[in-house]
Amino acid sequence: QVQLVESGGGLVQAGGSLRLSCAASGRTFSIAAMGWFRQAPGKEREFVAVIRWSGGSTYYADSVKGRFTISRDNAKNTVYLQMNSLKPEDTAVYYCAAGPVFRSLAYDADRSYNYWGQGTQVTVSS
Image (cartoon, rainbow, N blue to C red):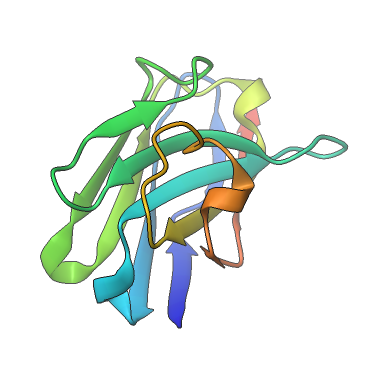
């Protein structure tokens, strides 16, 4: 089992920045990819970004490309999401996810991840 704990959410004005953290514990050696998803009220959960644990390749949703950066610290088993130029439409609960395999054709799908954090609220005011 892998446990994921997110932190760093909060309230920020449009144009501001936040950094989310996700600390993994347990069988972390089984992790091949860690990602971030988000769910806004009344909407389905959507992919934000993913990073391959080995090699560090990153992939982003078009809606956040150029504004968000995902990174990892292997020694701390932690993944980060630096969010800049935040917009009101970025308001959502952000979830960290981890999977044992990096699925190159499905890295943006929920089903590619076995473990999920409890979520952290990000609210961007206009």
